[in-house]
Amino acid sequence: MKTYLDLCQFVMEHGEQRMDRTGTGTRSVFGYQMRFNLSEGFPLLTTKRVHFASIAKELLWFISGNTNIQWLVQNKVRIWNEWPYAAFKASDMYQNETMNQFIERIAHDDAFAAQFGDLGPVYGKQWRDFGGVDQLQEVIDQIRNNPTSRRIIMSAWNPPLIHEMALPPCHAFLQFYVSDSGKLSLQLYQRSADIFLGVPFNIASYALLVHMIAKICNLEVGDFVHTLGDAHIYNDHVDAIEEQLSREPLPLPQLIIHGDQKEIEDFKYEDFEIVNYNHHPSIKAKVSV
Image 1 (spheres, rainbow, N blue to C red):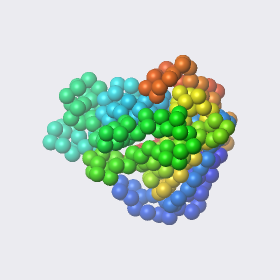
Image 2 (cartoon, rainbow, N blue to C red; image 1 turned 135 degrees about the vertical axis):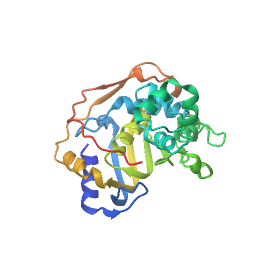
Image 3 (cartoon, one colour; image 1 turned 45 degrees about the vertical axis):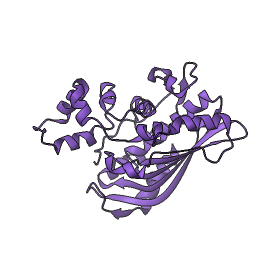
């Protein structure tokens, strides 16, 4: 994952200081691109531990079209907890509950989860119902039936609904490409990229999506191309980035997908196996909301 470390180094050296929506402040550059050959290994960061289970379960949640965190909470995925908790704290119902108390109630109280666990029409909604269009299924159909099309595209950015979303889509625009050699590649445009916390998850998530679609379309995996708009390191993540840059990358693990899936909905978390994942210890950092 030297490619990712090169991004970190570039932003540390060339990023400009900018204030941001969260009030934390960042070092930021505009416009950066990374390329990962997925046949060389699964791009799961090795200079710190990255929790693959959370990545895979979140992706399955997107694919299902779900936008409520209850299923994620019940499956021990914490990625989205901060945003609904912040909304709950601003409500009249907040009685000094801790995050843990809030999440416990989301997990076990369906009515409470319906009121405070929904994120609005975020990724899963746009993927599976963009104004009545199942974009994900259309992408798969085009890959199968019209693989040389330049219109194999999926967008999570739906302007009329942005104000209804807990967080406007950061990873917003996808284009798939099928080579003459039978390899499936994907380019992602990410408008806002939290380099320390978010980007390692995004790389692995969309690499996994390529593997899944390639499998059900009888293709090999090609490249994942990751194009970043505002690529930033939060000021309170600088020490964590420097710790990562001091570590030597280790060989990439391999992804095995068990089973004989025919459609995108057929995948379960238990189908995925990451083998030979050797990594440096975890590095903790605070998410900015």
